[in-house]
Amino acid sequence: MKVLHLNAGAETGGGMIHILSLLNNLNRDEFVLGVFEKGVMYERAKELGIQVQLFQQSSRYDLSIFNQIIKYINENKVDIVHTHGARANLYAFIMKGFTKCKWVTTIHSDPRDDFLNGGIKGTIFTKLHFLSLKRMDHFFAISNRFKEMLVSFGVRSDLITTIYNGIDFKIPNQAPISRKELGLEDTDFVVIMIARLHPVKGHNIAFKAIQRLRSDYPFIRLLLVGDGPIKDELKEKVDELGIQSNVLFLGHRDNIHSLLSIADVEILTSLSESFPLVILEAARAKVPVISTDVGGVRDLITDASLGRVVPVNDDNSLVEALGDYILLKSNDDLQQLGESLFKKASRLYSLERFSESIYESYKKILT
Image (tube, rainbow, N blue to C red; front, side):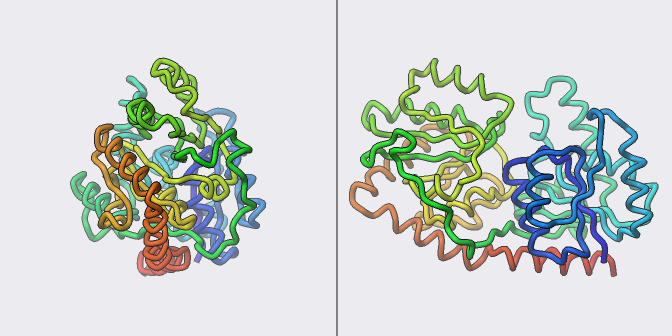
């Protein structure tokens, strides 16, 4: 079997972790990562010893890349091209007719939100993306909710396989850091949010909640881990709300587990997700979670003993959940939520289970 995974290569968040974790756990001889630019993902893959093929573009609109990819597929007798992300899917739409291999894609996000706030250009690319999805031979959905969404788009149910994300729960903990290194006190209630600085992640909901809680709980602190296109806009919003002393912008960080180790709770305020890896990372660190009701979150957090799931775009519910967690911490009951989440996640969302399911699906697709 020869499988080429295609991604733009600009991903640094959950999508990158998803792809690299999978390829790192599969046979190196059978799987190749193809990217369109040298970035963090390219370098990380090289460090892991994953086969990487660079299909260099001079710009996003350099169409010579199609000849490069088609030539590679045909010369290397690739059996399956597995695309990740809107850009790779759009390219697949153009190239599929020039190859004999199967084309599959993983739906990491709601296609309707991939070009959120992109204006006219975003509207055009969204329509093109939907056209590209119609040409795929098979789909991997990261939650049952996303499978239902694809069916609502007109995709046949038998062409969709639901396979949940998985991470390695056995890796050693990263070197710990102290709260003092970040200017935090031991008495602070530390909320961590690991997300791209992008409109779909709903940072403004978190900001509203922090503003409302700080009067009663001035010791609440929000750590923002990640970078993105609306960084300046979000900093202006923090200034406007007067919560500068409660919010820390940490930028892109590699030591996620270390940062989680000093947090009391991890929050996710996304407007749309498939199955967010940050929740599994929090579970691995035994950190309690509050998440919006997106993707497959409820399949993991099925009741209040495992965490809280709140409505999308609802700062009232987030305020209530954070207030409850602050009270639980004061009673020394908060950590039990993290322990319970770890036990369930490590049993059902392991990297081994995830990669084996993908591999078996490839074999079925080819037969």
